[in-house]
Length: 100
Image (cartoon, rainbow, N blue to C red; front, side, top):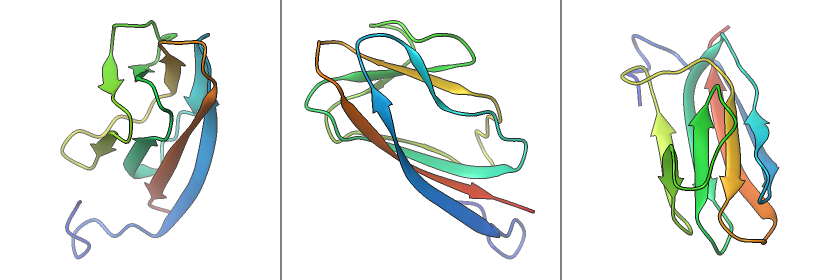
C-alpha cells in the first residue's frame, strides 16, 4: 500500500461484481483510483483483463480465494473485465481506494 503520509487514500468503496463464463466489465475506469484489491470468491478460476474483454487462459489468473492487488507501484486506472473458466456464476469481492 502507498505510504499514507505521501499518498493519502481518502475514501474506499467495497462491493462485489458478478462473473460468468462470458466476459463482462466488472470494474469501471476510475481516474481517482489509488489502490485496488480483487478477491475471487468463486470455486473456479477467474481471469481478469485490463481494457479488453477477458478470455479464459489469458490475463490475470485468480485461483479460488486468490487475490490481485494494485497500489501506486502498479496502478492502472482503466476498466477491468472478468470471465470464469466453467459454467459457474458467482462474484468477486472488490475494494477500491480513491484520492479526492
